[in-house]
Length: 204
Length: 204
Image (cartoon, rainbow over all chains, first blue to last red; front, side, top):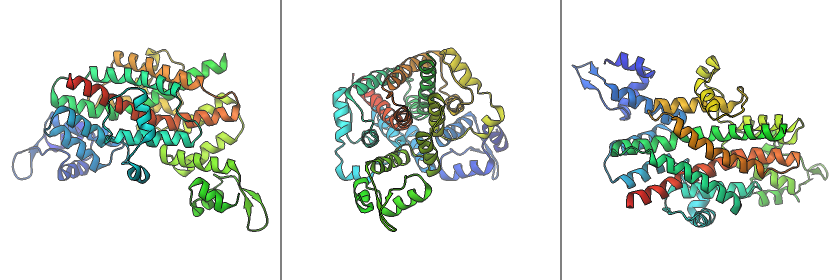
C-alpha cells in the first residue's frame, strides 16, 4: 500500500509516520522509485504497537524505541524477556534507592513469598519504592496482605505465561505488550471490583 | 513543633511547605504570633500523604488537592469513596470515548463477570481504553483470560475492603491511599511473578 493508505489504515498522521521512519521506530517500506515506497501489514501492525506503547503504557519515544529494538533483535529468550520488561518499568531507581541498592522491604517480601528474582531487576527497586510509600502513608504491607496478594498475582502471572506463544519473536512481543498493556486493564478491573464490593457492603 | 522541625521531620523543603500552605493542601499551624506557627503530627502525616500521592501515584497538585478535600470533607461514605477513587483514575476519558460514551468492551466484560458498576465511573472509560489497546496490539482479552483475571482481582479487592477501617474519615483515606498506593505494589509484584515463573519455565 502507499503511504496515504497507511495513514488511513493506521490512523497515524503522515508527519508522525515520517518522524517514526526518521527515528527508526518504523521500518522503511519497499522503495518504488525516488519518492514512493510500498508498505505492508507489518507497518500497520507496528504503528498500532507504537501507539499502544505510547498512549496506554505511557512510554516516551526513546523507551518505545528500546522496546522495539529488543523485539526485533537477537539474544536468548530469558535475557530478552527480562530486558524488555525492565525497559517498561516505571522510572529508574530513585536517588536514595540507588545510594542504598539494598531494597530491604522488597527483599523481605520476596523471601517471604519464596520467589526467585534478579536483585538488579528494576521491578525490585519499584517494589521497594512502592512499599516505602505505603509505609509512609500509614497503611503498611502486612504479612497477611502480602500472602493474599502474592497468591492471586501469581495465579494471574501463571495464566499470562501459559498463554505465551511458542515462537521466539512473538513470545517477546507478547511478554512486552502483555506486561505493559494488561497493567491498565488490571488496574481498572481492581477499581471496578472495589466499587462492586463496596456497593454490596454498604447497601447490605 | 516549629516549621524548621517540620521540614526536618517530613523531609519536605521549606519553600514546598509554604507552597502547600498557600495552595491549601496543608492545613495552617496554630498561630504563635505574627511570624511563628506551631505544627503537629497531623502536619507531618499530611506532608507524607501529599508526597505519596505525588511521587508514587503520580498525581498533579490539583488532583492531590481534590483528593485531600474529599478526605477532609463531608458526604456519605459510598459517594465520597466513589468520588475519591474517581479522582485518582489515570486521565479523563479520551475524546473519542467522550463522543461515544458507550464503552462496549468494558460493558461486555463487566456483564460477563457479573459486576455492579456505575457507567459514569472513570474506571469504566479506563477499562474500555485499555481493552481497545490490547485489541489493537493483537493480544485481545479472551473470555478465559477475563474469567481468570476477574476471579483473582476480586479476591484481592475483597481483602482490600475487608481491611477497611470502620471510622469514616479513616475509611476514605484508606480507600484513596490503598487504591493509589497499592497499584504500583501490585504492578511490581506482577512483573516479579513473571520473572519467577519464566525463570522456572525456561530453565526446566
